[in-house]
Amino acid sequence: MAAVVEVRGLVNRFGRQTVHRDLDMSVEEGEVFGIVGGSGSGKSVLLRSILGLQKPTAGTVLLGGRDITGMSAAELRGVKAGYGVTFQQGALFSSLNVLQNVQLPMIEHLQLPRRALDELALLKLRLVGLNADSARKYPAQLSGGMVKRVALARALALDPKLLFLDEPTSGLDPIGAQAFDELVVYLQRELALTVVMITHDLDTLFGTCTRVGVLVDGKMITDTLAGIVHNPQPWIHAYFRGPRARQRETVQRETGHGA
Amino acid sequence: MYCVARRQADRVELLLRGEWRVTTLPAIEAELATVDTGGQRRLQVDAREAQFDLSGAWLLHDFLARAGAGGVSAEFTGEAPPALALIARTLGNEPAAVGEDAMSRTAWLDPAFAVEGLGRKTVAGWRLVESLLAFLGRVSYAVGRASVQLRRWRPTSITRHVYDTGITAIPIVALIAFLIAVILAYMGAQQLRKFGADIFVVDLVTVGVLRELGVLLTAIIVAGRSGSAFAAEIGAMRLNEEVDALQAIGVDPIEVLVLPRVIGLVIALPLLTVIADGIGLVGGGLLCHTLLDMPLSQYLNRANEAIASTTFWVGIIKAPVFALLIALAGTWCGLRVRGSSRDLGRLTTLAVVQAIFFVILADALFAVMFMEMDI
Image (tube, rainbow over all chains, first blue to last red; front, top):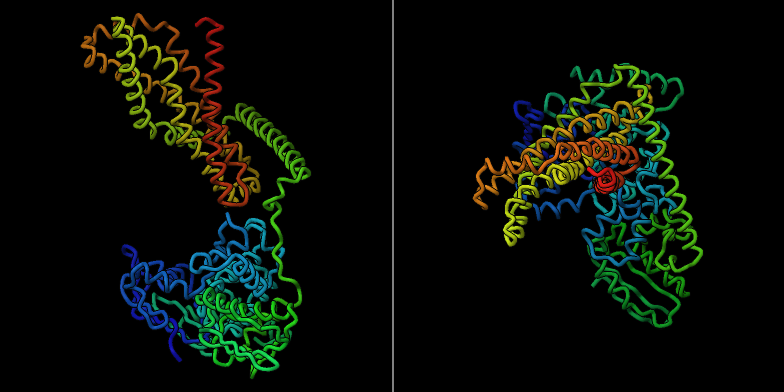
C-alpha cells in the first residue's frame, strides 16, 4: 500500500504562535482518514498545508509521492487537478448556478464539448443524490444539506482519487448528516477513493473512518478507531470518553445499535 | 488508440484499451465518433484491457446508449467495467435532461414573453418604490423616536462615522479641490486674457468654487468613498445574518445602522466642504500669483469684492442635503442585499451611481431655486 498523503516534520508558525511542531501524518490508499482536534489546534492550517494553499514554515508534504512544498505554481496546478476538496461552508460560487459550479473545474482543466459538460456535471449531481431540477438553482436557493452535496459533486468533477472534506456534516441535522455519511462511504467504495476528512462529529467518525489522527500539542497521534478510544492522553480521553461520547454509547446500548 | 473496431460476419467487435480518464476524454470522444457499426445489429465490447474512471465510463455509457437508440445491441466479452454499472444505477431510467433556462435564446422574440417581461418589470419597479417609501418612513420614524429619547442618538457610532467619512477623506478632498481650482483659474485666465480682463479670473475661481464646485466635487468624492462603504458594510452584515440578529435582539437596524451613518455624514460633509472651499481659494490664489503675476493682496481684495455675503452659504447649504442623499442611497442599497455576494457587488455599485445621480439632480434643483430667489 502506497501512502497517498504523507506529511513529514511539518512545522507551522505564525509570529510567536506555533501551530504544528514536527507533525507526521500518513494516509494510505483506500482509507477514510479522520482528523480530530480541538478548536484552534490547527486542523484547518494542516489541511491548507496539505492542499498547497499555504506554504508551511518547515517540513514536507507529499501527495502521491511528490513533494508539493517546493513546487512552482504551474506544477501545483497539476497536483490540484488530482484531488477534490469540499470546504466547511460549501464555498459554492454564488454567481454560478449548481450546474455551472460543478462544471467550473472541468471547464478550467479540460476541453470538453458543451453536451459532455452538461451530462457529466449532471451525472455527478445524480451521484451525490441531487436531481436535474436543482441544476439550475443558485447556491442562495439551496438548503444546507444540498450545499454540501453540490460541494461534493464539484469536488468529484475531475474524478479525483483523493478527496478532502472539511467538516462535511457540520450544520446538518442528524438525519441529513447520517445520509451524508452514507453517501461518503458509498462513493468511497464505488469510486475507490481515499478520503481525508476533518470532523467533529463522533457519529461521522465512527460511521465512516477507518483511522483517526488526533491533533494534540501541534503533533498528530494516529490510531485505529478501536485503539484511539483507549488512548490515555487526557484530551483524547475527554474527546472519546467525555459525557457526549458516553451518552452516545448509552443510547446505542439501549436501542441495540452498534457503531 | 483507445478503441479498435473489427467487423465480423454477424457482429462488430470493439476492443477498448488504455486509460479512459477525464483528462483523455476529448481524444477518446473523437475516436469513438469514427467507429462505424456498418449496419450490424450486434456489438461485442471487450473492455478488459482498459481502465476507466467515472467520466471515461460515462463516455462509453453514452456511446452504448446512442448505439442502443439506433437499434444496436451491445454485449461485453468478460466483465463490464464496474463504473458502468454505477452510472446505470445513478442515472436510473429517468431521462437525464437539464432543465431549460427560463430565458432561452429565442424566448425574447415571443410576444407573450415580452408582455410578461414588461409586467414583471412594472411590478418589480412598483415594489422598489414601495420599499423606498417604507425605508424612508422607517428612517423618519427612527429619527422621530431618537429626537425624543436622547440615548438613541448613539454618539460613539456617529463619531466613528464622522471620522471614517470625514477626517479620513480630508487629504483626497483637499487635493482634488486644489487641482480643480487650479484648472479653473488656468482655463479662465487663458480666455479672459484675450479681453484684458485677467482680474475676473478671481471672480471665476472664488464664485465657482464656493457656490458650485467645492460642494459638488466633495459630494461626488464622498459618494464614491462612503456611499459604497455604507452599502458594502451593511450588505455584508445582511449576508452574515447580523441584521437579522439585531432584529431578533429587538434592536431596530435602521436606528443602529442607518441613523448614525446618515447623521455622521450630514455632520462630516459640510465640514469637508469648508475645507474644500478653503483649499480651492488658496489654489486659485496661488495660480493667479504665479501665472498672472497678481499680488496676493490684490487677489484678496478682488475676492472680497467678488463674493457676496451669500456666496459661501449658498454652497454650504447644499452639503447636508447631499450628505443625506448619499447616506440614504448607500444604506438603502446595503439593506436590500440578500442571498449572495453577487447581489452585494451589484448594490454597492448601484449605491454609488444613485448617490451621484441624486446629488447632481439636487444640485440642478438648487440652481433653479437660487435663480428664482435671485441669490
